[in-house]
Amino acid sequence: MDIREYLKNGVLLFDGSMGTYFAEKYRDFKGPCESANLKAPDRVLKIYREYLSAGCRALKTNTFAANPLRFQGEEELLRETVRSGMRIAQEAASETEEDIFVFADVGPIAGAEEETAAEAYRRMADLFLEAGAHHFLFETNGNAEHLPETAEYIRSAEPDAFIIASFAVQPDGYTREGNYVKDLFRRVRECD
Image (cartoon, rainbow, N blue to C red; front, side):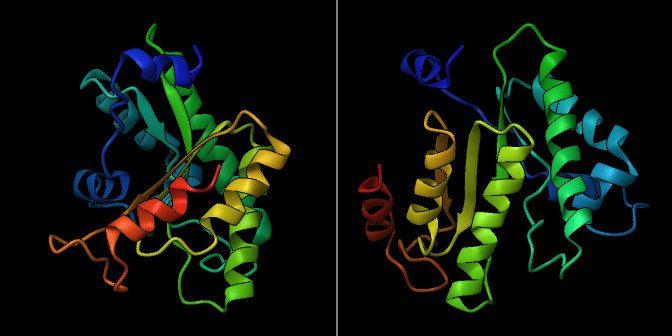
């Protein structure tokens, strides 16, 4: 089913925080949870199954902190982490009769020069598109920098892509970076 049709009649419930839950569940695992895509895919799959049995209908790839800056030039490792993240989430989704949507999960890319951050977002889009992604989630952002441009970039390659952005906002309506939620919403809303 097309996600847009699904949303006309239902609520899309996402899985929870993979990193937090993974760290709590597998205290013996060394390294970031994204590395489990390659080192312990069975553990990631088990968590997806738990989320699905709890009623979620959208799985985020286990790639929140995977990006070119964090992987410091280890391009092949990043590519394999993304591919494996997609494959595991798709496997979990295929095990159920329900309509399950897999989202390429991209966390904030911060602490870089503007040009470097923009390039990193485009690189993540390329890696996910290569892996077969049709749905994208840019999550827990403190600003909207590079999101409209990245969405446009994705749509140029995958015109029917479904793209969501989420923001981490404090109770006063501002992000840690000082951006007001209504301004962020307006900025991404104006982007097709």
